[in-house]
Amino acid sequence: MTQSTDQNPEHGPGQNSQSDPGQSFAGAQLEDIETMSYEQAREELIAVVTKLETGGAPLEESLALWQRGEALADRCERWLDGASARLEEVRRSLEGTGPDQG
Image (cartoon, rainbow, N blue to C red; front, side):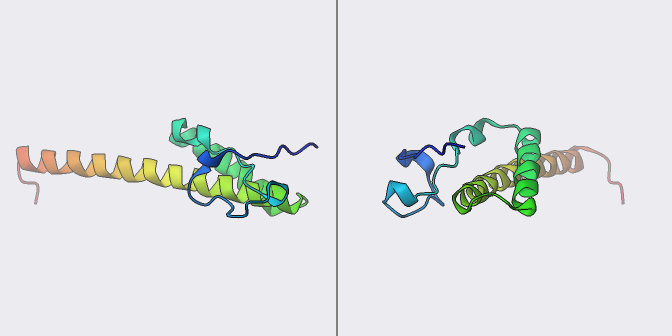
């Protein structure tokens, strides 16, 4: 398998701080994660975790998978936090306009 050397500085937090591209594990593609639905991010996160748990990947690939998994988990968490906030907002609006259900 040919590993491309990614020198794109747009990976954001969690990027490998080493400047030597030959030792960089920042080959994880992260740009597409922000456009994923919760379900897409969750399914890919499951696949990443499974691949990491089974082992056998070279260290550099494992580190890139870990980095992508962290970004996917963050995306899922933000989706869930947003959904929770919307549900809380609806609950508060219903409590304010509906009869008291004590």
